[in-house]
Length: 182
Image (tube, rainbow, N blue to C red):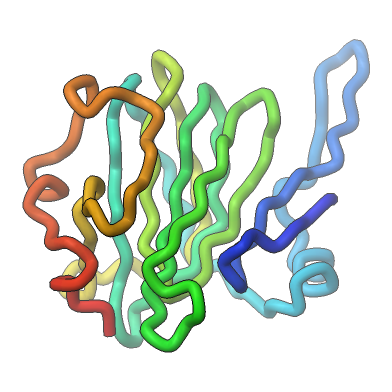
């Protein structure tokens, strides 16, 4: 497993070691001990989620506040997405900055998004199956978000705005400077 920290402290891009032969491939998608050895983070995942989306679907930017904050380990099983994390830790040197990672069935990369980050993705392929592990349970009352096209974030979603498919709920999210982040 090859792991590298992104420009946002605590978030990691992960490339698994893939074993391929005439039968197909195998890779270890998560190993708690290896993850700890490589990152120093002792993460206990308690919930796995999966979504199916079509091209242009943008989900995010989402996070949970307070005791229900979540770290996520995300990957794509089928298709490709542009995955985005925004640092919303008020005392962070990179507050308001974001990082984007291309996740696909071909590259099999994973992205670790720590607590204190907003997260979202847009589907670049015709369809995508997106999978993620969370270190805390979903809590509807703690759910928050940031508007995907907040001009201060300046995120390049790689698709024209008019081709994006976004839920009404996500279109009504506040910009970062008006969002509840604690």
